[in-house]
Length: 125
Image (cartoon, rainbow, N blue to C red):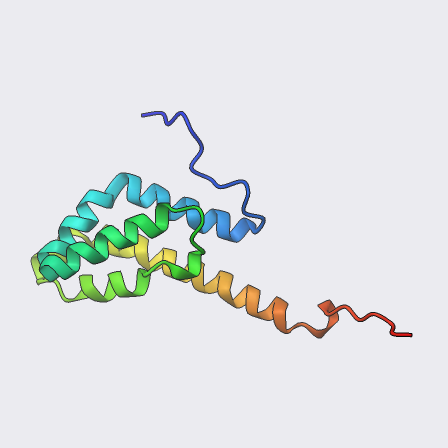
């Protein structure tokens, strides 16, 4: 199936953030309903709410990638019974990879912010 619009957000300057956003969108496009269903089986109404919130945040171009609740989704899925965990192993692996990418992006941002060489000083007087 060919998509007629780009899921990548070109207005985002950071290439890592665009890649993470794209990865989340592709994952949700292919498996979002299954993810929400699995969360509903694990956590009933709270699980469904988490799944829909995760989807809405991931697809909202205005939300920063740090606000994605990937760790919370993985924690909820970890409480599933063995049979369900086996059926959603690929989903869990994709989410774990997404979490690693988000963490890498946060570390890069922290290193850039802490780099004294990047600070600009202006001469007063």
